[in-house]
Length: 155
Image 1 (spheres, rainbow, N blue to C red):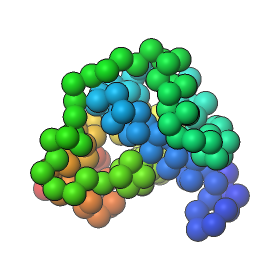
Image 2 (cartoon, rainbow, N blue to C red):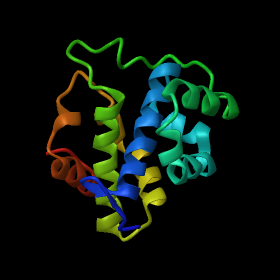
Image 3 (cartoon, one colour):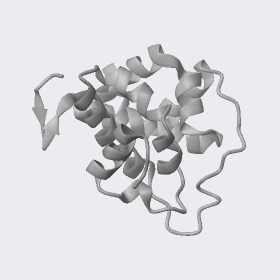
């Protein structure tokens, strides 16, 4: 990972944060599960978002999301975790931060690159738990979320 610092974290960690936040934004907008958005976008598009995040971040998120929704032909789904939430709903930025921390932890612990870690994170049972806004899992300590992923269970 590039060690260039911009603010409190390195630039690539911030790019990952934007990538995960955009995935969540697209999922909310299209009412799809996050893993389904990841699959519909595909690795190449996600890598493009990650590599050009500093550019996309300066653009309007609705425009950026609409462009990726159209290019990936993402259709409307029926998953509405925002509408089904009984409590305060975290923002797409909040959830982007949760996934960023999880992905960086997976990459570090497993010695794999960030893109492989991203795919593992979104395809894990932990992703389903993070996306349940009626549970408290998404705001659990980052290390606890990573441990649940690594252990394959929630304790």
